[in-house]
Image (tube, rainbow, N blue to C red):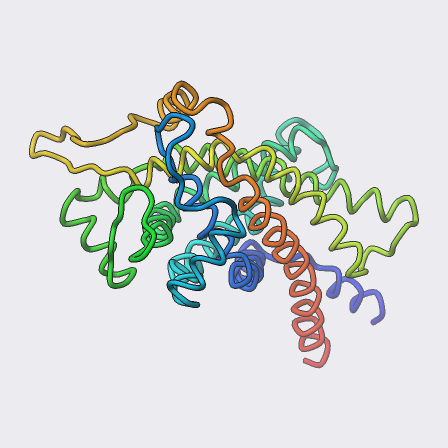
Length: 326
């Protein structure tokens, strides 16, 4: 009986269970990180394709947060929170739900143990799971970015005013069709694949090092916090240029003619955006809003990964406890 109970307790989560746990963890995180995301979005759009020395509405990430709160209140600080929740469920549910199945499959294809931690297969699995989530959530990220950029008091960049998420989706679809909803999907995949390729591999590697060296136990909250802190710093460093390109591609003014030609677009694709930004604003243009990005991505990653492990452990106890009682 004891061995049966142990086997039940140690049974890994299914993809659906991991998807749901990851989505819930991400929603908890985005509640706290969304104001920094609003600040990051506005800083990335400020001075778009303008030479150095152009007038600035915002001086820093903290200045954005302060002015947004003063002029728009909590509603302004949490702009885009609705689509952010939906996007995080799709993105992190996919990233955390598909990562292990992808990694196990890739390991098996090259003749290695499914559970073995191999750096290259971990990176590929992370990028692939992130790309799935980015593709599914692209329309939600699009309207989230536009909602966060909108400010009735201190606007920067192109302004898109929507009454709600449903209004945003219907307005874009009426004006541009399905193509408008998938705009920037190449930039989204690039950004998320880059971040995902390091997020879970660095988190798992750090956690394994902490546990194997006997610094902290595997189920310690401090272990989760330390591992996710390292992961958050790595993600921020790797994905910042792609994140800037994504924000600008999403927010650019454009309309599609009957012949399918887009007019008013500033950028053809994310690479074109990065090149034009570099030519006009220099390399620092890629890293606009980097402080706000770190203020967003670091706590978001820490809370998501820590909450995910805590939620999984709690869920397993409830699930397996019920099975044992049955």
